[in-house]
Length: 499
Ligand code: NAD
Image 1 (cartoon, rainbow, N blue to C red):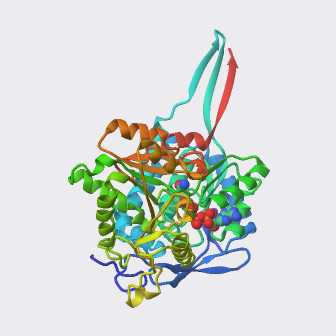
Image 2 (cartoon, rainbow, N blue to C red):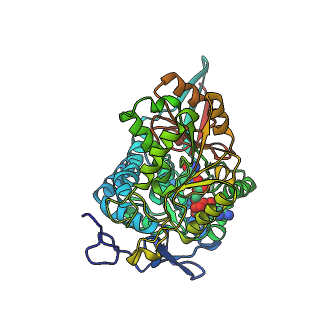
Image 3 (cartoon, rainbow, N blue to C red):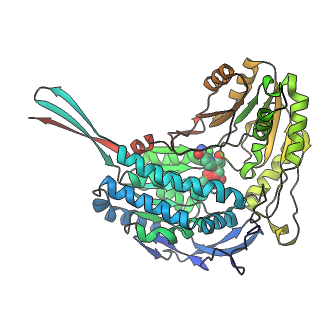
């Protein structure tokens, strides 16, 4: 269809339960304290279901269920676990539309993205780790003629995973696929803004997963997330979210001396060198599209190219074309397949972004387009829509240094290669970066000089399962994706045998 029916309306491919409990030990369990909270769709700003409000008692039960399942799950063969991941992927593929519409309804992102990118990528992650697991091998070292060291991979045990609201299913998959492949049991806490799409997915796949191997506790950060991250019986905590929360997670983890994976915030530079504008050809158009990518997913992407650095010599023409392009991006009902920008995920996020509009203007930046909340009329009037916005300024301004997590671009110019790299690296963060040039050597030099875990060269916003992803500096610790993640969810057992 051109426009998917809203969940609850006639003809919708999604139907929610009126309330969702925790999922512990293979069944739905009501919250120990008996409390629920509203789940609101940013499309209209109205509640559509309610979720169990988790506390430490629920986390205890989930960790306990994980340990109960662990002895038999950890002894399954790689082939068995790989088969389960493959079956999950197949089940997701068969239900692609329902999962995509659910993700859109709860997060506000356009259904064209969830159908074509978010959910297919999540499916591919399950398949990738099924394959990576089958290809994993141990090691044998000859110590001397009579002594051999064998190296085995063993799972960690029960691990905790805490995820954000910007790509709920994809972020859950990045953590679940390697953890389950490696033979761990998981307690996952979705973001309080977006738990329902994960439960909808769970309903589709739960018969494929042995009881207790995957447990889900809903709830808020301090009430359910903190007891999970500080639980004495988890063996690792993997977290994606804000840098400030990441610091707390590391403190909790230090109590129990467990490893952390932290995927945190960013303020990614997107650099356009002079030769980009040498001709107005297909490459130029591609670079222009790269310029507009700050608005993708409403800017709610940890790697959002939220700072554009454009060479002085081409600045006026390139930026002029870029601003016109951004004005043409279609904003609208996220359930309409032609919509390119939808709603921000929550009212808090909307207000945070609007406050940065003031911070930008008051800090002396010049507004080139946007700058306001968007009223799309009808049912969408209560939704959380923001115009794609471009500010021109300098890198010392707050809007260039602080993560806004909205469709707001901070734009500046540079004078030569060294100036570009120096501005790009003048940030606390180091997650993503983009470099655009027709000169391969320049791309390489810039890519190596930028302090970021992922530098896209002549492309942006691609997240294949087999490319390592993660942050330098205050953007995080550890990596996700790529087969190296199996190591992050395993420990090495060494048997030293004297024959
Ligand atoms: P957030 O830190 O507010 O929340 C993330 C998760 O942590 C939620 O589930 C929340 O309930 C939980 N949480 C909050 N306080 C907690 C606490 N004290 N103890 C335990 N858990 C707690 O982040 P957010 O606003 O949901 O997500 C946006 C942020 O995530 C942005 O900064 C973005 O850059 C980052 N992000 C990073 C990546 C990456 O891979 N590096 C990917 C996506 C998002």
